[in-house]
Length: 434
Image (cartoon, rainbow, N blue to C red; front, side):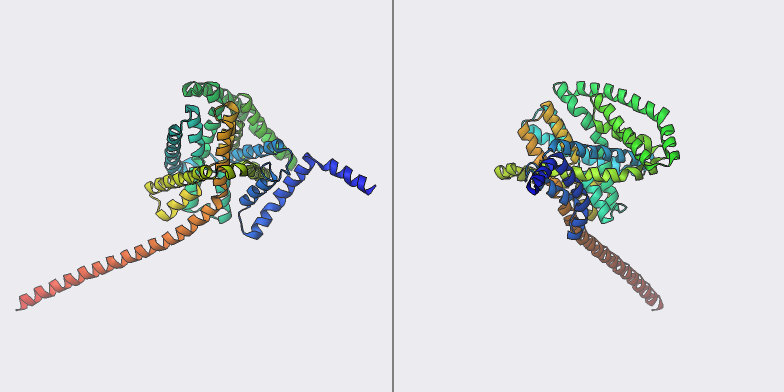
């Protein structure tokens, strides 16, 4: 009887039930354990995803459903980015966003696209790969800045401003990727079609925002029910993401626009507080699924190629971002730190590459190579941030020493000039006396 009961329980728990328990346990225990071990929780999620995913032990049986939950994490992340983005925020950070951010994105995208052209990629693939690899991981970097308490520092603001511009560029990337495939890689036709679809989406979303959003949020707020607040937030975000996805655009576009609409209401801060725990759990699941994309078999079979892509991407993005920061007047200690922390590929590259594979723009082999390489650059981000921090401390010490030396030399020069002046006056008085 005991054996039969145990067999029945094992059979009952197979599949999605076990997956759900593993995901909940991972979300609950990963951060406390990583804090005890003094490592980044992001690395913990990645390692667990690699271990338990299809390229590891294969304990997660339904990878597709897990990735669907993770996609909701990206939707909620874009929603939260939309809440943080308003006109006043952009204007207060215009140097970091439109100066450093736009320059970094443009130069990197053109450089990567140029390399892809030399390697024989199609025009559509060049656009998608260049655009995608110019993006960094907002989820990784913002979490690191928060953990380090660096969000309000000059380094943190420059990094956040650059990420903000990159997040703005995510929306057109995710919009144009499926359209490029449908137009045979013709950019002009893709842009025209995208403009029509975006116009339809904007009309529907902003009509809802103008007529129904405030009254709906007012009713829910007056009820004082937390369940009602969470329910209406999810309904708005998911509903608008379905609207844009149904029009042939990206579901993240709807989420981003819904966040921007709510940012202009008096309920902005309450919505942000209510949505934050949900976003945190779902983004944690996203990091977990990133570990699924690290193909250990490919790394073993093509180590040099993977190493070349990872090293080349990290080096290229670090050099470009550091040079751009220096060009806009940041000291070298901060510039190199920004360059290193933004050198990885971004989470939205996964969405773009998968969409490009589904649309036939990228082959399955090239997509796996890109996904594995970007996953590895993301996994290296906490280490690169620590390296940048140590280098910054050393450079700051040198800069302070140079400043002190300069001040001392200026003081000596002034004292020397004063001494020469006094000597000249004394000499003049002696001559007169004689």
